[in-house]
Amino acid sequence: MKDKRTLGVVVPANLDLARDILLGIRSFCNANRDIQLQLLSTSGFVPELGSQGASLDALIAFESNPKFIKVLRTLTPKVVVTSNRFDLEAPRVINDDPEIGRMGARYLLSKGCPSLAFLHAEGCHFSKERRQGFLEITENSGIETRVLDLTNQIMVPEAVKILRKLPSPVGILACSDLHARWLIESLEDPAKDIPSRFAILGVDNDTLDRALCPVPLSSIALSGRQIGYAAAETAIQWARGSHPPDEPVRIRPRGIITRQSTDMLAYKDPVVKKALTLICEKTEQFREVGDVVRALGIPRRTLEYRFNKVTGSSLGTLLTQARIRKASNLLSQTDLSIKEIAYLVGLSEPRMLSLIFKRETRETPSEYRARTQ
Image 1 (spheres, helix red, strand yellow):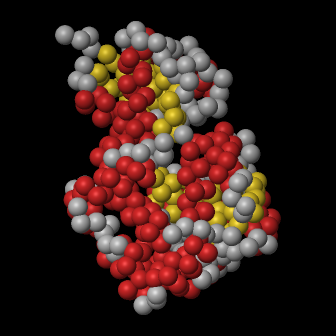
Image 2: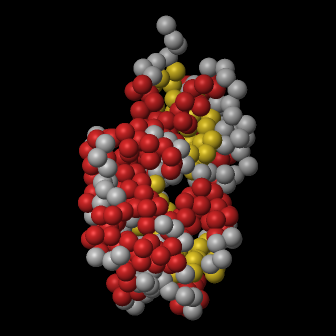
Image 3: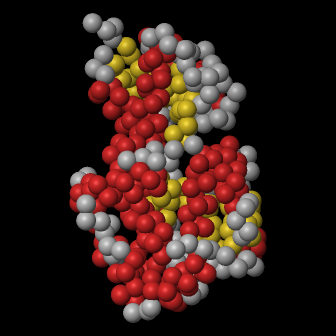
């Protein structure tokens, strides 16, 4: 019989991400009955942890408080989640921030935005890495791209002045939902400017920032539960004698949740715009490209030519991308069967969804659902 192990956890429960991490840790403990979860703090700081640490086999900490770091340095084994901020020798399970930036850039490019911008917070480790990933994708796109400093709220008016000079709609990735909200709140008439002038994408999918935002905010959702599960697994393996990973374990974001702040296609060609709107809103009605052609009443050759000229992609490619985006959201946000999802994205057989999904994402629908739920 395995020895009982006690896993201590310190998380600031006021954050959506931290709560999701805690749920992931709980899932690991539920799957491993020899692990006892001990929630030490929901504030992210335990001054007396040094004395409590002796009774723990392992500790998971949401690294955020410099004073807490002094206490953490005295304890082992420990795993830190979400952060690279402090010089602390410990395994880390963190967000894949460069991939978050890359994902945001690809999404905004797919919208056809003629200019792009990244809202950066100087001194924030996550913002630096998200900016890096964003620029990796945009540097060869040929599209004008700006990085604007939004470290604090007083910088917002100057950023808006610069953004208004760029070709619109400007595709904007903010380093967090908070920074996206700052920008939106500064606009005199957000409903007028968003998304026709500014298509804004945040990061975190945070409940509070979304509730306070004047318009529904599109956001990159993070994989908090997967971070928590991987952190618990790493901590317990170390406690049992395995060597901890030398490099941070990076967990990919769950995906993009599209809402009003980006939910408008930027292409100026009215036919292309109408076709893409139909594809996005009524994906299940289009089994093949011919169905789109018939719905628009335009010769197929003319439609294909305009699509290639305006978007650089074929109508079939964009129809497939719309299927994948909708399937991804349904897989991560619902418990619908693969068969039901296949029907809702315009495919007659689950096998076709599996083939297309694997080809486009390198994951099967089941693998994607397991990773993102």
